[in-house]
Picture (cartoon, rainbow, N blue to C red):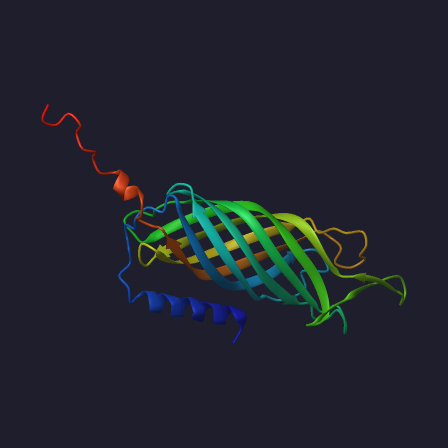
Length: 231
C-alpha cells in the first residue's frame, strides 16, 4: 500500500476511535491553556534540483501549544522526515530533515460545529543531511573522483506556513488535519550537490490534548460578595 493510503487509513482509525465520544460542538474556550500532541504525515521535497527527485515519505512531529486567547496561540514543534533519493547512485541516497519550528496560529469556530479551522506561520531551524546508509552521513564528492571529506549534514534557517482544522471530540481532546509548506535557506558553498535552497510540503493528521481547559477562569466570573449588604 502506498504511503498516502496508509495515512488515510490512520486518519480513518482516529475518526472511528473518536466517534465513540460525543463531539463537543461548542467546546469550552482554550484561552490561557496549553496543549500537547503528535502527528503522522507525508513529506515531499518540491524545490531544489537535487532534492525534489524523491517520492512522498513518512514524517512525524511532536507539538506544544499555548493559547494566549481563544483565537491566537503559539506553537512549538519538532520532528523528522526523510525521502529516498533513488536514481542518484549507490551513495547519497537518503535525504533527511529535522524541522524545529516556532510559530503563531489563528483558530476560529466554524459555526455550530465541532470544527475549528486554523491558519499559521512561523520560523524554524532545520537540520538537513544526506546519508549513504541509515547510520552514516555521506560525504561531499569533489571534482572527478576526489572526496573532499565534508560531511553532508548542516543546519539552516527557514520559514513555514500552515492551513488546517481541528475537530473537537471533547473539551480537551482534538484531532487535527493540516498541510504545511516549508522553505529552507539551505544554500551552502561547501557542497556541489544538495547545497542549494530547498522547500518541502507536508500533509499531516494527529491528535492534541489541551490541559487546563475550563479551569481557573470560571472562579473569577462569580460575583463578589457585596460589602455594603445590610448597610
